[in-house]
Image: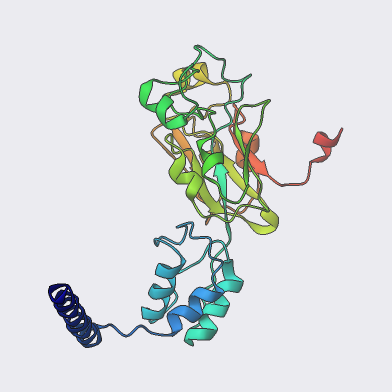
Length: 278
């Protein structure tokens, strides 16, 4: 009986000594955290989407506190209002950033891009992309399984059953970039939302030459360069048989849209022209 009591006393004393030593070590090596980190985190939306380029809202808060300027630091979910609050806490001027929105750069509808095979595997764009070209002859276009829709935590993406393409809801999109990362074909891009949400976009990423691209999809860009020729603002470049519009230079004149022979260029959220209303 005495042995048991002595053992318990020894264990208790050992545990107490260990606890005291751990406390002393913890106090000696503890890192004092800036209380402003908690303050900044409180004003962030808490989405932890990674759209800011950091692992989560806490990491962004730490980066903001350590920074001497908010330039390059942005919460895409909270936007300018949230960064203004962060600036107030830290005494830093928020840097104005143009609102962005996800854009699906593919117009390969079911009619324009006929099905050449049938995929019976797991409903995943990533898996289909790794296996073969897809159900159509276009090796660049949307695969239609909806990986981007599943990745969006804000309900901003949905699949159009008629076209087989994802559709972005501008009002719900926070430009977090999760859909961009989820797309194995890299057809989704974050672009400036534009004044009144208007923007010009080449809805194609096919880099094949004109004839093969056109054969794979009637709406494909054929790299003819007519859009580049008519643009007076040097906003359009044609590389690897594909036109691209620089949203920082584009003045929304719509001349490129009229010049495109395959209607690969789209004017988004513009009012209908008189001839379109008839």
